[in-house]
Amino acid sequence: PLPAGFACVITDDERGVAACLATHIAREGGKAILIRGRHSSTASGETGYSADLSHLDSVESELSRIRDDCGRIGALIHLAPLREEEGASLPNAAEWRSRTATEVKGLFNLMKAAGGDVRQSSGRRYTGLLAAASMGGGWALGSDTPDSPDSNFFPAHGGIAGIVKTAAQEWPEVACRVVDMDLRDSPDELASRLFAELCTPDSCVQVGYRNGRRVSVRPATSSIPRSSAPDAAQLKSGMPVLGPDSVVMATGGARGITAEIAIDVAARSPGSTWVLLGRSPSPAETEPAETRALETIEAVRAHFVSAARTDGSKFSVTAVESKVRRLIQEREIRRNLTRFVAASAMVRYVQADVGDSAAVAAAIADVRREFGRLDGVIHGAGTIDDRLIESKSPESFDSVFDPKVDAAVSLAHALDDSPPSFLVFFSSTAAAFGNKGQCDYAAANEVLNKLAEFLVRRWKRRVVAIGWGPWDGAGMVSPELRKSLIAAGTPMIDVAHGVTAFTRELESGSIGSSQVIYTGELAT
Ligand SMILES: NC(=O)c1ccc[n+]([C@@H]2O[C@H](COP(=O)([O-])OP(=O)(O)OC[C@H]3O[C@@H](n4cnc5c(N)ncnc54)[C@H](OP(=O)(O)O)[C@@H]3O)[C@@H](O)[C@H]2O)c1
Image (cartoon, rainbow, N blue to C red):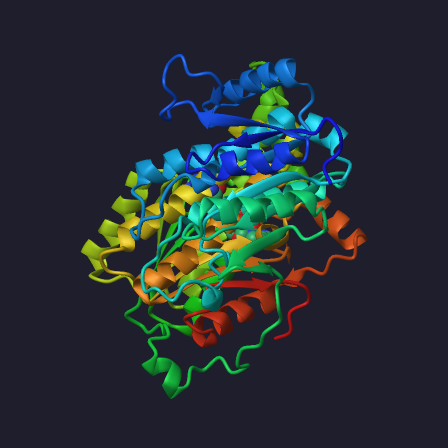
């Protein structure tokens, strides 16, 4: 089934799957070139190719050597994620980062380095982008995953799925697939399945092999009780219910949709305490007189343009825009802090970059020391920097992926000794479906989805990643994006409906529902 002259690059799992798959490919007249990790056991003098997958330069230079030796690369097969045996524990931060760098970001680097080749040559005659994950074969989707009480998969492998699902949208001329595998199966079995996936370029993007059966991932609709009042059975099962003594931390909770939700929940639990984390400095209690009366963004911009023109320094549009942005954000934070107080909540804003694990650990320790409890955490901090894979730099990928994921991992570690009654990650539909220009964002959010399931199994508490569709009227959807979403007929989430959906999910969703999606026109 493989076309004449077929040549593909395979990152080596070094447990025999890649070698066995190469034999299958050779039998069909194709050529497989294995790349080993540079810091792996490659003996000096050993022939073959190796690269530090975590560095784009290293990947690019080795792929150009391969191109010189073997011609154009027809397919990219990423099996390095199968290299590690999964342990039962939560990886420490250093191990997490190092594995993510090669197994998740390494895939992005390979796609940047070989995407042009694969897009030109594969023509959907076979699967041109094929990546593997090892989460047990069922993508850690609740009941389809091993019954073991331990978490025995690496949640960051969700990131591989996020990247491949985005590639499937950005590269329509390439069949893209990501396969979850159970490492208890033999290398021979795994290689045979991967060979079948390589030769079957259908439109199925996310599949797995569970107990020897091929499964595909599709979202399904489900309903939860419409009443927001938890019943006795739910109370008994440990569902989170907030009272006047409750203390909740919300990353990104001073602005955007996290603030809208947190204020709504606070208003339902008068007297509760809210600790909000954000990078912006804490705003002064009142806005300086010279800008206070400027109501529109245009008026604020005109003010800073005129101030810049008269202060004698070189005029810079970037500097003006940054001042405009800061002022608008300060106003939003100030207004929201006032709304918490109006909702009879105690609120504290803490300036912290949640991408910094020490800052997250310190914030949690401070809350516990001061209030003696921490009932719930909402991780809403996140940013976007939309660009197609070809034009996205590793720095841009990191700027979106790292803060969101590192913060989630830091929270998991800091809360592990005494988990709160709920932890909610704000994820996105981009994780479930991929989204053009958002390979990093899709990857980060899909890691959060899988980390939620990992923590549910570990903590037996309510941990849920909510994959939101775009919201209308609050948050990161810019006026330009809003226009194009409306033009494309994409239904958006109205603020009032979104906040109600959150409360209902938190109070009435089940402990096993760790990955849910809310999108479209939600009803109250
Ligand atoms: N709005 C939507 O339509 C939508 C859809 C799907 C998913 N989501 C998710 O929902 C969450 C909130 O989104 P949003 O629309 O409300 O965004 P937003 O309006 O841009 O607010 C993002 C918040 O995160 C904080 N933040 C960002 N990076 C941070 C960091 N490194 N450390 C600490 N705080 C940080 C920001 O505060 P500072 O700037 O002060 O740091 C801000 O408070 C995000 O995780 C997003 O991915 C949103």
